[in-house]
Amino acid sequence: MKKYINGLLLLLSLSACKVSKDIATPKPALPDNFRNAALTADTLSIGDMQWKNFFSDATLQNLIDSAINRNYDMQLAVKNIEASRLLFRQTKWNNVPQVDATVQATINRPSNNSLNGLSLSSFGVGSSAADDYTSYISLSWEADIWGKIRSKSKAALAEYLSTIEAKKAVQTTLVNNVAQGYYNLLMLDEQLKIAQSNERLNDSTLRIIKLQYDAGQVTLLAVQQAEAQLLTAQSLVPQFEQNIKIQEDALSILAGRLPGDISRSATLDQFEVPATISSGIPSSLLANRPDVKSAEYAIQEANANVNVNKAAMYPALRITASGGTDAFRASDWFNIPSSLFGIVAGSVIQPLLEHKELQTQYRVAEVNRDKSVIQFKQSVLNAIGEVSDALVKIDKLKQQQVIVQNQVNTLNRATQNANLLFQNGLATYLEVITAQSNVLQSQLQLASIKRDELSAVSELYQSLGGGWR
Image 1 (cartoon, rainbow, N blue to C red):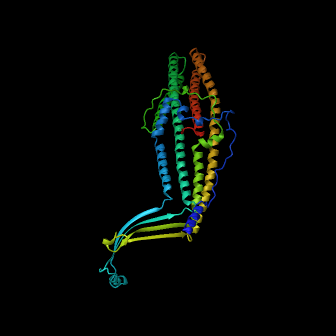
Image 2: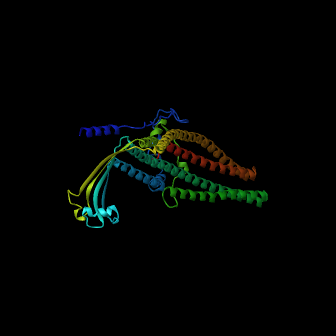
Image 3: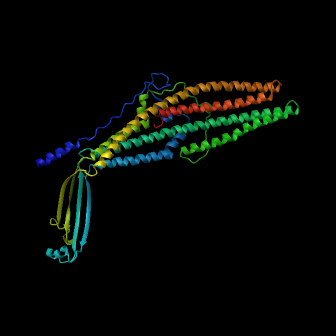
């Protein structure tokens, strides 16, 4: 008994051993502040805000909510979590002995000329066939000496946590895509209004030129050029209407709906970008960004896989036991205790010929772990770069909007003056057509810049880890 207890204590002490040393998650070099960020003492980030608080428009909120609940990419991400959770729960049974129940009956008819056939009579069987009726329970258990089973559980846990972060990453991307699609739809609405307004303006100009042509004040060339300018404006209307329908269909699909119209009352001018946007501090990305957290869990999973492959090269201690009833007559099958039997065995298995293959798998696991560390560093670097890019976009687009807005105001005044001068014979029809064409292009450009600015804010929100709360 003393030897048995000492053996168990030895197994317990060995089970605490670890054959491989884990690599800690590296601490990447982070800047004190994001590039292009306004210097502020505020450490809070818009990435910490819930998406319902960040996007206040009711129609946009409804689209995002529908997308989160009905989008098929989100549903697949949820199913990946469910599958990973089931696999992780299964690892809790890895330390439990494997138990199997067997019931079998066999009939062996040996040759009369064989030793088995000749010996049947000596056992008093009185038959040319030997029956055997067996029922037993077998047990098999492997001692987790080198931590292989624990490492498998850690790998399953890391994979499960990674799928949760992957689902968050899908949601952040989905929220940003819906927001950008919505802003693009509002831009197309605005550009359609601009095209229709310019169409009416050109139609009015054409009527005046036709009157002047009838009066002999201008040539046919003036009428033809005015008609061409009108047709140019008219061609934009179906183009924008087409793009609106396509964008509505794309948004509907993102929201998990059949393609169709999207009711909206908001206009592009109703959305304003705040004068200052808090991006927080770079270290907050490590906690907010799902892709960075997923890369961190990948290191933990790689550590566990290295330990599993290393432990596979070491001896494995297995204990097996079986017991039940055995008889050569069915009537004696459950004659207890005469038909009882039991076997207990212990074995130590050391891989020999496959040791090279196991060593290769261990080296590959080490390489994969090194790759996971590199990928983690790259994910942090990409995250910082995305935040900086979004910040500079917002800053420069604000400057562009001011310039183009001034340009639109100037061209609007120029168009009004050109019409007045033309009606009084002090400007040519070419000056009027040119002014109308310039104001059309500048108004369309201004709407595009406003859309880009709102999209940049949405991109910043995603790059700071916003959207999954």
